[in-house]
Amino acid sequence: MKIVGISGSLRKASFNTKLLELVAEIGSDHQLEIVPLNDIPLYDGDLEEAGMPASVTALSGKIRAADALYIATPEYNFSTSGVLKNAIDWLSRDRDPSMPLGGKVVALGGTSAGMSGTSNAQAHLRHTLALLGCDMVTNPQVLVASNYEAMVEPSDMLKDLIGKQLAAMEKRVKMHAAMG
Ligand SMILES: Cc1cc2nc3c(=O)[nH]c(=O)nc-3n(C[C@H](O)[C@H](O)[C@H](O)COP(=O)(O)O)c2cc1C
Image (cartoon, rainbow, N blue to C red):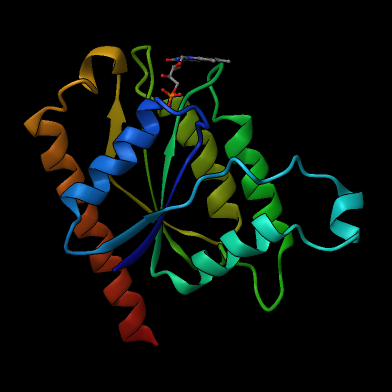
């Protein structure tokens, strides 16, 4: 599979970006490209009217060309990060030639400092992405709590879970291919 990976955290030492890197490592049979969101501006209708920002069209193009999208989200105040929601808002506005998220196979993972392991953030994301027409891979869920411990030396259980999630994504991508 050709997968685009995005992290909802911009910081260099982000545990969520580290989680994406782990997904890329476990899915080394696939091609996972991590696209940073640092250059995506805050959504502004005036900016949009002046022409889609190049960073947005670059991201849209990569997602359109990919079989699937993997999103690693932090949990901020019981929801996803503003950075991620902002990027999704831009992606929902780029419809030339089609909305990049429409019908896309999407899997979520996330890691937080608290005990939720980003379950609240992922629930909110799933709601938005499902309404945008994404084909959400919901089983298994990759929720990593207490990241300051869990992400230092990721457990075999987590690696196994990610392997199963990638297999579920591949199954879905193959179904899409078979349906034409
Ligand atoms: C604004 C803000 C809100 C946060 N809210 C939560 C929260 O609701 N639940 C939680 O478990 N952790 C929360 N945290 C801690 C994050 O889970 C933790 O900083 C995490 O490592 C951020 O992801 P990153 O390492 O990818 O940057 C919050 C952090 C920030 C900065």
